[in-house]
Image 1 (cartoon, one colour):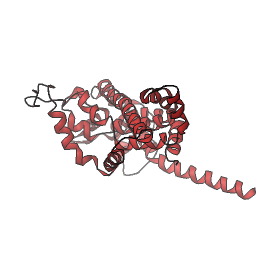
Image 2: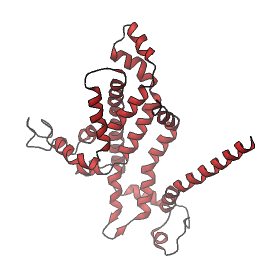
Image 3: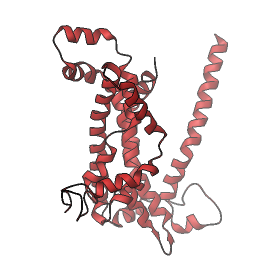
Image 4: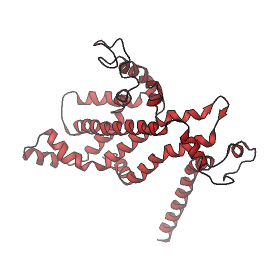
Length: 287
């Protein structure tokens, strides 16, 4: 018993130290957001600022139209998460519980998407969005206009599904007992009704996990909005952070202040969904 308690103490201390090490960048980001540029450029490093002031936050939010940047990121992230949860869970349910011809081959090709770096598909995806028929001045053949470039739809559509999300949902639904499907069949429920009345209501853990992963990925994405947008009013928060880099140098204090505010929604989201997130990661890996 003493040995078990000692091991628990060692484990707790070790995890606490590891957590603190991972929090060091966050702590330094917050402390830097409170400093003046003179303190940051000082040859003598000090973790804590000479005086705690939120002036950098006020100055940072005054530089640019941040309400618009946050609105864009919230709308894009919210839409991408919503449609991603719907499409990925339906596809995962189909692969896990339905028998149809070519399922194994289709799933094999789907898994190949996990090995494909996003940089490889970025240019073809951009061309598809730019040549989208009857959108942005394009004719039926996709010529003459800009398609879905610089639009919310162009930013969201390529993000609504993914191999990893389908894989997680498939693994999760495979743990459901077959008796649920048999009971639904006896009651006369079809495949769609079975999904919406039985599987979806019992998918809180995996949907919270997938939603959190997708939200963090979309919120922190820099490359895709950079490629798809070309106007100030369509910028996301990640693109807006680059405005603090000027020809005369980088305004680190204001950039860190803005970075704290940009990171805050994801911290809050994780704190709210951490229970379901851990549960979903564990259950989706059980066989």
